[in-house]
Amino acid sequence: MRIERVVADTFSEASERARQRFGRDALVLSTNKVGNVTELLVCIDMEAEAQNDSSAPGAAVVGDGFRAALDGVIAGKDAVSVTAAAPQSPSVATPVAAKRVDPEDGLQLVAAIRAELHALEKRLSAGQVQGGLTSGMLALLEQGVAASYARKLLAEDVEIAAMASGMLADLVTCDLGAVLGVDGLAVVGPAGSGKTTLVMQAARAVAERSPCSVSALRDARPGARERFFALADRATLEASWGGVPEGISVFDTGAMDVEELQRACKALETRGMILCLPAHMQRVAALRWLNAGLPIAAVVITHWESCEQPLGLLSLLAERGVPLCGLSATADATAALTPIDRARLETDLARILELTLCETDRSVG
Image (cartoon, rainbow, N blue to C red):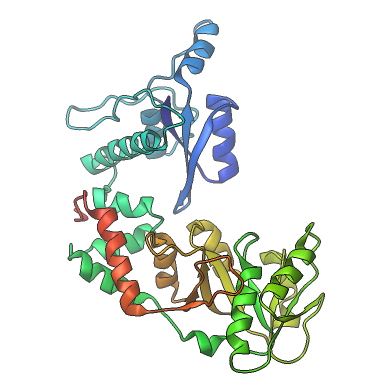
């Protein structure tokens, strides 16, 4: 197996280039967008590729695709059209030789990807591109932190604890009780993010102070209505379907996407919105919701894992100054939402930064 990198302006272009270059059986391992460039890391079956190449008379063997793709980016050319790498001086580091990787072994795949990325880092820092990446910078980028914010964290090569403190200072948090209890509070977010569970958890928190019900906009997805009422019954909440009742209530926007919410925003403009973002959500997908112009009062992060903080998502909220008001760590509709404990969050941030940067040089260079 070999890891290859394909870059393009958009995801669709990068996917098409990967298909043309490596065939339909190439496995896409990860997708990332840095600035205006979309990057795909693709796993290639070297034996199958060698058979395909040898079957075509005079066909060139793709033996250095990662370097060719990189040279295409540096030269501003189409990564697919670059068939040979430019001559290199002895001082320029070349990508590591590809090893045979067991596709079923996740640790081997991650190690192979890191080896290729570190080879890229060495080439960039050797002077071919100004402002080459350091190990610390690359480690933060792998966690989904934006390049500009990563440089800010690494600017003075401070201690891990100070980096966590600085990130926490940028992160706006607000009281969960101040957000809940708004008349007609809407929970919005991507499908599968845990919105319906969050609706029940939020409504139970409101019901501790005053009567509260839950409602859902009509959702055509199979089983959505049945699941909504089943969760409401479990949470012992009064529930309605297909509208937004008057009074203190929390309602689920169901399958409504960003564009649908934007069109319906006039009807919802006097109602608060909580944005539900799962901890595993990638930066680009989260940006789509944050840039939608919706009247977001605060964010609740769902699928929260106390041992694995979403560094990329938290750094995005810190960059944008979007308030974070709570965490949801379970799919149990009767469980309480966790308010933000800044001291605990600082400790967690320090731990994940330590794990991310422990084996890297944290200077920007």
